[in-house]
Amino acid sequence: MRNRFCTIFALVITTAALLTSNVLADDDHADDSNEVKYRHSVMAAMSDHFAALAMVFTNRVDRPNDLLVHAGALAKTAPLIGTLFPDGSQGGAALPLIWEEPDQVAAAAQEAADATAALAQAAAGGDRATITKAFKEAGNACKGCHERYKEEDD
Ligand code: ASC
Image (cartoon, rainbow, N blue to C red; front, side):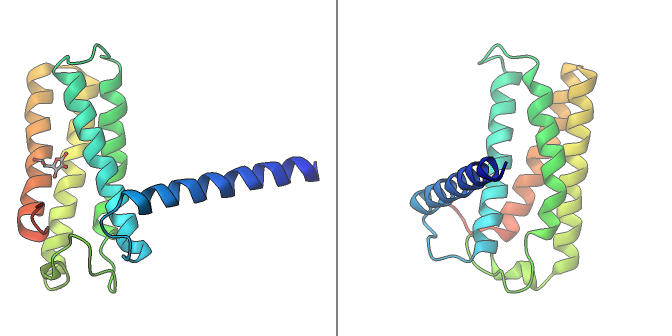
């Protein structure tokens, strides 16, 4: 029993170390704080689900059942956005303006949460026009916030 616990513990630690080193190796921001890295990881996860959902929806892959997976992941993750900018976590691609207008940021984060919830609901309903509209609105919620609060990509 004790041995098995040790094995599992070792696996968890090794996996965590591997993943962390992967993030560090990949990242332009190796010196960033863990809060900044975490913010980046969560945002990148959403970006990837958004991209995967688009591939499914436009039939670039024949995986109709995956639509719900990605829409659900977005709807589950987006409520974190409002928590990703605690005091002291300045840095990364986040512009300082975020910490100067927290109410506006909270409203924008809520908008993203609402838009992804609507997208998940649309995906569950299965109507293409409704999904298209919800997809665009979710994209606009991401984009609107990034335009005001995110450093431009190079
Ligand atoms: C993404 C991503 C963004 C937004 C934005 C939506 O998947 O990485 O920054 O969606 O492009 O318009």
